[in-house]
Length: 337
Image 1 (cartoon, rainbow, N blue to C red):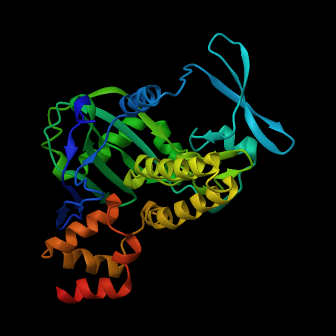
Image 2 (cartoon, rainbow, N blue to C red; image 1 turned 45 degrees about the vertical axis):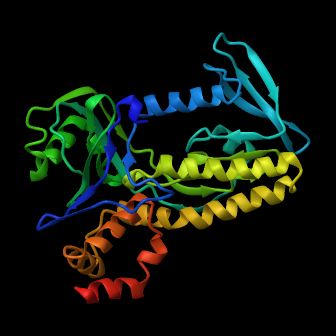
């Protein structure tokens, strides 16, 4: 990714008004730096990598449905870019088609652990922003975030309660600029910055798990599990689930294990590993004032760089959330202060 011009992020911050925290999440699987690529760049890299690995790539192809033999999914039905109708058979169909997955709906994938839509968001890209700490800035009834991405640009998402969606949609620019102006730490970095492209907004931010497999099909990434993007963990979680489903499908197709058994293990692995981040994101997306326990933790972290880095590791997905937020661990950190 560095070859695309997307800068690495070594440290992140949390601006609490009276004071700010910053830290570097501990390494995960040998990697200690973060990166926030644009989807226009990242998706093309994935597509090219798939082609180089031997996949047949059909761009401009729209899947319109699934085909079946009895109750078993055995392929897809779709439309080519010139309008032709095509059917393709497969030993297994993988739905990697996002939170509004056609594959999931056509297969009747069960939804569970669903939570209400909690937020809406507006975001923009800026050129010539002075490099600064990538940070989360919680404010009353909103969170402002900024981080660098490809082409020398900085992205500034602002998150609001879902109830404010009509007001936000009516004035995207106003809500964005007023929110950025509320953050003193961003005044100097954005003094001469110029917005590029249009301002974007979204209120389609569901929170759910779907059963990610059935007879002849499986789901990966946002198609099978979606959460509020307040901590920007969607791509990381999708890549991890892609590894797990690939291992399961390989075991099933090779005959090493029954396919259903291997995919059931994929589901258990996914839910076990990703539910803690799901719960953390949903909790943050409530945009409620911090609890006394969290306020005490933040205060204790001011003079504890080791645990401060580990705290940011929970936000970045490199430190186990249940382990860090265990009551005895929090008492230890706060007590040490």
